Image (cartoon, rainbow, N blue to C red; front, side, top):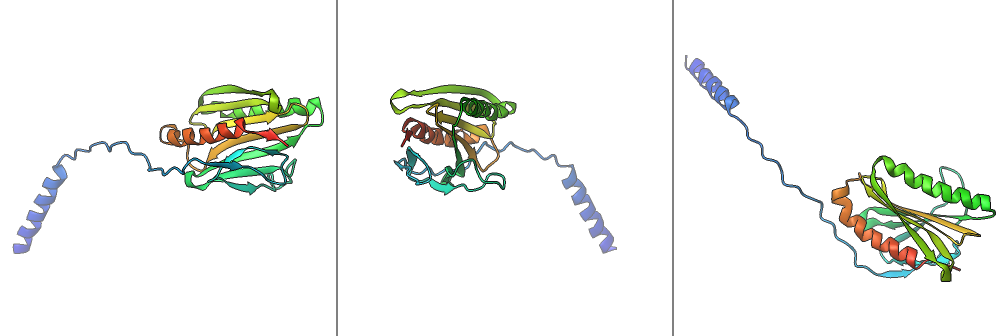
Length: 198
């Protein structure tokens, strides 16, 4: 008899708790804490490339010796890794042997950037024109949820062509990634503006 009463009491309490309305409150927006390295630069001086530029001291140069399980078009393929920000700048060099090669490389650079149009809200094209250093090209600032937010190509328009693109090893979330992208854009702008053929 007592067990029946205890059972009924437990049943009644569980029934009352089930009828209680749960009020949920939205969680406040939060972003991961990012510790930025201190800005400082050093010359990029790798023996397998015939150019130089100023690279961040916190970037690690990784010589890239494969391209989809094949040998790259040149020995001067490399990546600049920024481990603290989970970022990688992919850089590739192509020798130019004809006007046809040059036109194809430029067309490929535009095509690769335009592939981000699916997720991009806007692509800004900034011309690079430094005749004293024989450096010409275009920097692409890609806005929105695109995988690569900064791309560029640089050339002397006769013999050399370099292409670069910035990627983060994370899902593209424009709002939370924006401060990190801005930080890296300054490094890439410095790289482009100090670029010199040797």
